[in-house]
Length: 305
Image (cartoon, rainbow, N blue to C red; front, side):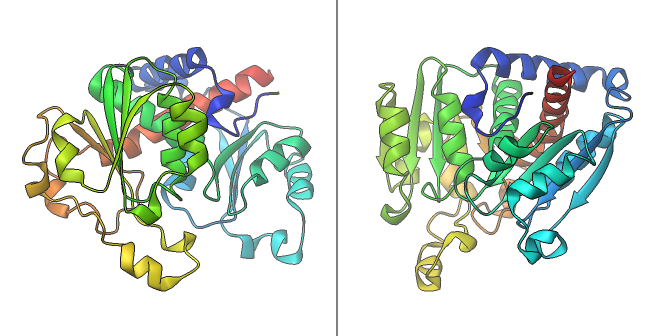
């Protein structure tokens, strides 16, 4: 049985296969409209989500399948003290595949060890968000035409941003990649990401607090919000939340073919005036996320069969 808990669970060859399938879904949607007929996806979301949960559910419906859902911890037996392991065993009796988001790191892994159906990690705490990473990779591939020979800038909350950690892991496996890490000192990339991924693979990288100074060299700019829900101290959040706000003025020296990504939700780190800039790809990213989740569901259910 195939689960997806971390982006490194997939080889680059498997990621390439998912991208090929995703592109075929874009070109031939009718071909896939009944691919999951008679199958059920359980979306178990113990943490607030709009895009990820709806994206998974839309993906399953567009594949001809059905969805059963838990949209918060309060509406599930978790509020009564049921363990993740027991929840996974129970839901395995109702569905064919699970997508789980949980505030505790490692919860989807525990679910996968106890479920009798495939489990997909839809985000666990500040750890990993592999399906967002797959969506990011598809967006970059479709908009830039490649996943190698790129300078990728990450800006904002690089400490708690699970999407950042997952994308760095994934992009580190492609050739001639350079990372530019832009953040306040307090929100730098964790040392384990830098040491175990970037430095271990001898990938070129720059760490800075100044976005405008590195803007001219970027092929991809990945903006992130400062996540209030990850802070224990509201004073720290208020002090750091407006550290980087992307405006047209700051894009003055950017490349014409730069693409701007953001996992959303946006608060105010990207000015609304940038939305009409052809380099703004964050809403395209939402579309690509649905398509990639369709491709992943097909892979997980297909390998089970």
